[in-house]
Image 1 (cartoon, helix red, strand yellow):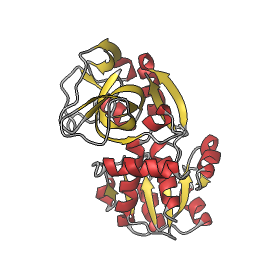
Image 2: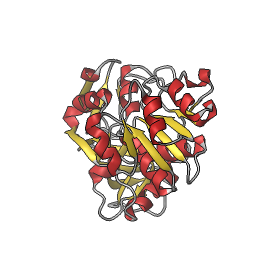
Image 3: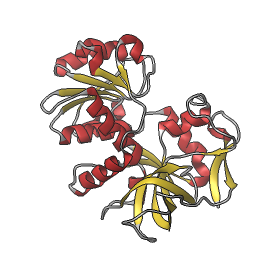
Image 4: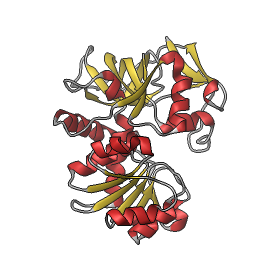
Length: 297
């Protein structure tokens, strides 16, 4: 089968479309014929070698963890699904014609494979970090880097819980952030003053890792009420970092429920074919995406 791999760490240009042996579902897993794969920041960070000490790889290696498609193989012990069922979920080496998923949910009626492929990592991350930072209904949450996949998911999950959201984004993405239910503002110099002019902030999430931890602490007045998923220096200032997936299966079920109720969507900003995975990584790495970057198979 065809799959995207990299034989060395480096820029997007190290990605190659190659022929590999098909994977098979192990116990507790399903294999899908991939229709679309989500592009996440962790994908290009691994490819670039930024995570080599945390996630050691034997090269050449595949890439991608999120996907949507049709089940074509079921591992031992798996119940509740059948070959031919459409699903979306999380696994490994999903930039490929076939991929094995370790967590999945049934594809809700009306949800495309392309949009669903962008759901898993953002929805799990959003639920996890909202819970971890301790924000409550009726309070105000600041999201730094609000227009990407995780930021988009955070806004919608928070709003569904009755949390007010202020989100930073570039000028071209502020209408998008507003459409999700947040009050948009720009990032950069003067952030503290701009946010204070909108509302007092009870907690803040750093999605982009753009060096704003001191400003977020100033706005919340408490380092423990600031959490980053991208700035690993945050704990040196008393803020939190969150990296470990806790409940992917539960998050996928929640995404399906919210989508069915009309309370959650992650629009596809740009889609690329499997052979153009390098371009997809370059777009994701550059930032300024409104929604999700995905790969179609």
